[in-house]
Image 1: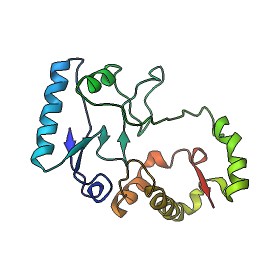
Image 2: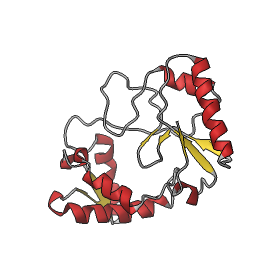
Image 3: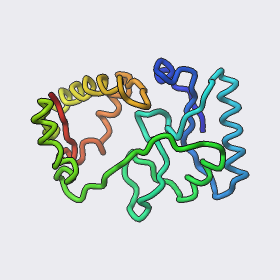
Image 4: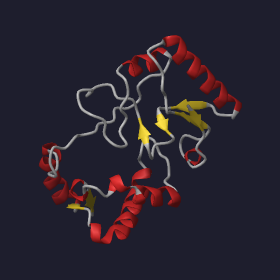
Length: 186
């Protein structure tokens, strides 16, 4: 349930351990025992804070689903039993940020995004486009450059190593529906 990410410890979360891969029946005593064990391990590693859920860090599955349980599981998005939010908070954790995921019924940009993108494009010189699968290697390199810039303001800064980026680019699910991936660049 616990790990220490050396790359993440180079960030604003220096001295942090991440907890994740939380699997627990709906039993407060079991959840508390898991947390006590994880937090004890983190203290023994010299960590001064424990952040989660991140499995294993912000470049993979993060967060705890608290609504939207009527749908089915989606790749790389937290999908957990309804009781997890209560169990996690009962162990002394508190919500820090809301993460939002949209389930798109088609390949069009969500209406909310489609409405404000023309304003962003006009004001900031940004252009929105789909990923070019014929130049996938180049797209991954461009993604990495954008990601590095985003890291500077990302609330859960975890630099992506070249190995992580390479693995991400090889996952077949990331190539399944190229029309669903949008780039916004200047």
